[in-house]
Length: 103
Image (cartoon, rainbow, N blue to C red; front, side):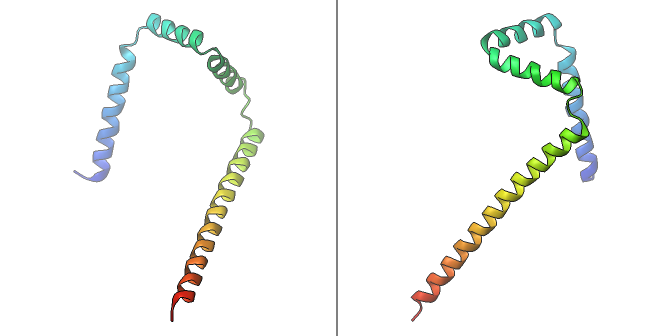
């Protein structure tokens, strides 16, 4: 069996398991579980409701998405650059230590 066929079979099995699990859900039980969670964690429930309302209300416009993307990109580039500089400085320090210790 080819690698692609194995992955397709695994995906199909995972989809079938998910569908079986969703088919066994009882709407009343789900409602009770969500209500209990909201009573135990009101701040999380309010934040989730606000986030869902924002998304469903069309809050993720292309402009907002581009700003989020640029923020994530800047953060990634900054941390990657800092790691590269740190590795370079460490390598230079090691190299200077080896030069200084040789006879």
